Image (cartoon, rainbow, N blue to C red; front, side):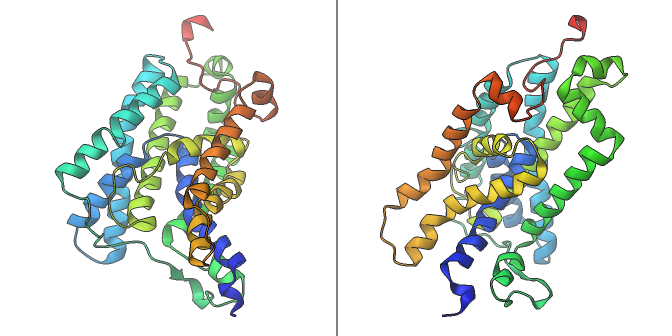
Length: 308
């Protein structure tokens, strides 16, 4: 048997494939993925042109649609100082499988249509046939490689730029940042919207790569998994990749083992990412854990300038 067809190689490649949308969502840390999924799929069905251009535009449209929804979240949590979890849950219902995205998908009759264009694997520099590493690293789709670049950009942005330093200051101590002349509200608005954009791109990955069609609730709560992933990765972009691929491994186990004639209930494997999410959230539910894991000190805390 070809070593590239071994179950270890297939699982590793599948973990990257299925974990990639979580990278985008975790970097954004917002739950707008279904909005991106439905609008990107609508766009890919109505745009014409070369595959690469249609997919690029559709992905951008998905990201911008999620950004538009995140404006509501930003106004609620930054402007009106609402609880972030409550606002996020409300928007999940509003824009999720029981709300806006479902309405758009049904009105546009997107269900059951195969995608006219979809992301497919690229043979990078002809290295896809290299034993073991070939199919894992050099035979993925364009968004996988974009997610790697995103992590590198995020690292450089947060640790090598003045603006990134300000972002970290706002997350640790908005009072101190305000005294230094940093506009706390502006930074929080801007990065909440950027998070919505990235979550939308992650959603587009579902409808244009993983399952190239539209199904109500197709992201299956991946936005909540992404939040657990951020915690699992200690709020560090470089660890997000490893965490996302671990969740991706659990997501792909059922498909890979079924293809290998391993007869176990698929529900067992389908539940693993969510069980892991619960474990992570329970483990960090205490203030002690929050500090030890390196969470931003002002995480989830509204900033009231008059109380500084």
